[in-house]
Image 1: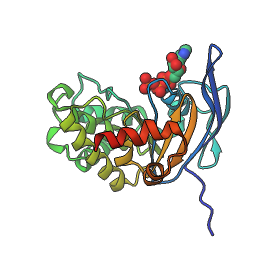
Image 2: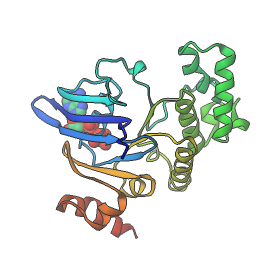
Image 3: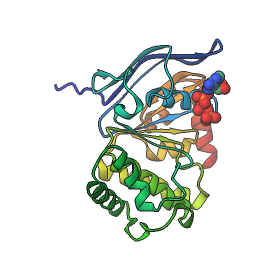
Length: 246
Ligand SMILES: Nc1ncnc2c1ncn2[C@@H]1O[C@H](COP(=O)(O)OP(=O)(O)OP(=O)(O)O)[C@@H](O)[C@H]1O
């Protein structure tokens, strides 16, 4: 049987701040085309993990392998990872098109190439009729689509999403969950999704990693986690919370 190399492999990652352990020997794999959620409450270490993965923070020990190669020594720019932030971090004075084009020109694509790629991606996320608007003229959901288009246009190997849905109102949240899922399938993107929302994680994910105080409590499919929670913590933080909602 063919053994697949994970797109991302995190091995024994440790990080402490002022003698407080924030990530405790964390290990997991993310496979090609997989949607994996990191689910945990505020303060459990999700953002720290994300910052280490994209190279904004250094781990105390452990390895980060992308398709089998250690990327710990690479700059953020060279890691082939795209990130969609919670607040989208769009440039307010640029149009939708300019927002998507900008990173491409930084990458030294010619202006014409950058425009072609940006237009093509904006078409795929259904925003061609909005390209000349500024972010403030768009709805929250549309702004999120611009942020996703900007990341997709760079064709990263892995897309990290830092609670991109929680800033939206309830109606837009439902719409964006469905859109995110369909975009991920359409692009066959490999995605790591950070959230504290059990329902988002269950709706979107192929697998979920439940975190608690820097530890992995359980890593499995939504169905298996719901049917067989691995600890009292998973039972109360995940299963009980979902049951309360439905
Ligand atoms: N630069 C830092 N210096 C000291 N402590 C830090 C630093 N960054 C994070 N921490 C601490 O590490 C722990 C984990 O923080 P982190 O932001 O990774 O959690 P989180 O799960 O992302 O939470 P949230 O959902 O609220 O963002 C917290 O106790 C936080 O106070």
